[in-house]
Length: 180
Image (cartoon, rainbow, N blue to C red; front, side, top):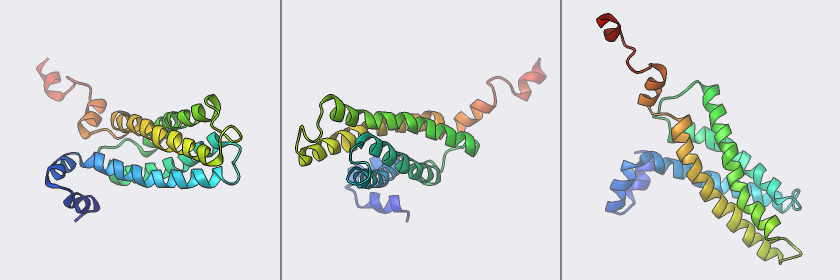
């Protein structure tokens, strides 16, 4: 029994059917949960040490580390059943989309930090950390996750039919050529 099957087996019956129908989304969410933990740990490690004065830089670095892990896990697990492009092309698209996602992820933190000025000395350290967590780890991550889910399926990890359609133009088969 796979890890996903074991997790789904513990769900209430109505949710099991839904989860099994959307296996790929469940795997994507599990990868997202794992990379969320990595992102959060790296972000707060950097934000409380060497990048204390640069929270957006700390966030971008944390997202970069999580993105590298995300590529490996998504390629080898979440989207394993999908057709693939050449590895270098797939990776380039994945990281280009992830760069856009990184900007989406960092934008709420930038707004919180520099527009609303939720930084010490304007607020207490506790208030700053709460504002950073909500803006970067909750709002930014959710917005970026929705964008990445759509973009990865649309542009990076194509379904096999889409791969074939991209390689073979419609109406260009041997039977049509012989008929003319």
